[in-house]
Length: 470
Ligand SMILES: Cc1ncc(COP(=O)(O)O)c(C=O)c1O
Image (tube, rainbow, N blue to C red; front, top):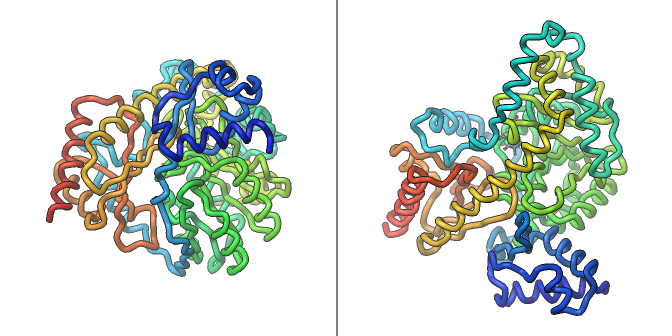
């Protein structure tokens, strides 16, 4: 065993036996060198190992803290995979999204990050300049696969993560949802088997419904988020064509799967020759020092189509995303020309200016910091006022908290009661087709904590308490 693994194991043991508590600060790297007698590089490796496993997280300029991942052992056993031959979720999602629209609704149920965080004044200035320049209106240069300069800038960002990428690998799309749908359409036909995580962004369920796919779901692993054993079992059992997975800052739960597991997933995809559509729309919303790697990094065989967008970092209003399509680029462009034709040329040009002049990186640094602060503030308040029988799942990254309610309480009932009081929350049923009744709900915590949110959270917790009592 390497020395760093030995040290990581010792610290893990302290976390597991409760000596180190959730959100407690770990000794600094230099203090740990003194305490353990290991070298600085060994200590750094051990901390990074624990961070990649989600056991600790880093706060900028402050150090490392213990996550509360270990307590998540209740998250999702038993180890059952389930098959759903006919998904029907669209009507529920449609009704739900209608119900939470409107300025008067407290947006705890929204999937969009707070406007205060994603709005960039610099970008609006650039958009103004672009709009006044006649050359920016050239639609031809922005037809599929999209603006060459924007694709080059996106390709550079992959290269920075050690993923060799050419501008020709990228297709610009109308947001991440378009990228995901086009990719799925390029790979799967009606009646094919698709693997989804048991709890997943409802867009994946809608896409499966639209294409008439048979859905096999993998339960979340209580500690690692992703259950490799169940995944392998599914690949052995069903003639799976494609998977659609979220492994970084998962929506709705929030976990990030560690790099070891990602590597094993890539090996299994290769072994069974199964494609992966990777939804990595929250890729920039990590709280640690290092951006988690996408599955694309481990993809030696062109099986992964990596999809993302600017929706979570600059605002969903932009509707600009992309797919790392690789050899599927032509096919996806064909599909695109039959549907949306192309992505807004003015916005593509504005993003080129914004990113190439380093404004995007600066914006992301500030965004991550604020998100982390806001999410922690929600977490601390809710955790300290939690009704009996509830369990709150916090993971460093993204902006969702996942709340498990007591056995007797249905999240749909809570949602229905709260929406009458103009408070939106996302009931677990939106993310899960294998459960008739879900005891979980998702909360958007990207907002600055204020009286309005405190009142809404108080109402939510009170409502759970009253359902529990009846
Ligand atoms: C997990 C996930 N994937 C994809 C999307 C869609 O992203 P976009 O708005 O870029 O289409 C969302 C939006 O909420 C999401 O939460």
